[in-house]
Length: 319
Ligand SMILES: [Zn+2]
Image (cartoon, rainbow, N blue to C red; front, top):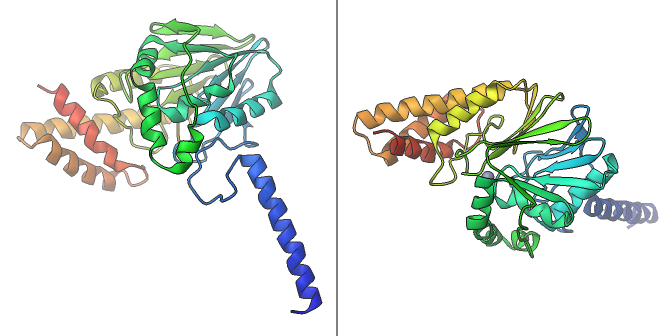
């Protein structure tokens, strides 16, 4: 090997490892970097309205879109991500845009990638809808166990995860004044879960729609109580809000058109499921058939397999 080449190699190796180290520091990724590591990515928060910042999921599976809503006296975090590492990344992003010591922590639903970052916010006030609190009490830790078993990385990320008792519970709706900006919190279940909760930032007109409306991702009927009729009613209600930006809990940021797009998609699944039930098809067969149809009809939508439980829900609700 000639000297110049050897020198170049050493320099580039050094640069590469510095880069790799920087990467580890910035994204809280493990050094291997090639495994699934669903931790909220640091350094990527962007301001989408006067009071609202979002750390985008960048469509990484099991990473949510995280919201940071900053008022003059308090700050609200929507979905702190999965595990302590995610929560810590969110806390550091929050510190860049807010000096408020009063912090509210709210979550769209019980699943671990939305909730378990709470460990990094030991003094934040946790506010939950009654139904979501019930979901968490009944199944929160069970879901942590299910996720943790999926890979050694998830085991590591979820180590020590637990749920604190909320500081406040509301029934259907509650508005919190953060100082110069108010957030309307609305229970919106049963849809993806019993306890789905959505957050509307008044004036900024930003809606955090949870799993009820995501851009080009089929809605997931994740619980036995997931309900098509209720989901459609909730989307009608959300469509009447003056939202100009909609942040689904996963996927790309969007405008309000995704509310109607999700509504139309669900209504179309409902119509087909009712037809096939009348023809005497089993729920299973109908689910598979409609999933196939919709895979072609809605090519740009992810996760068409989620049509199957949606059809099962319609079958249960249709006499
Ligand atoms: Zn979920």
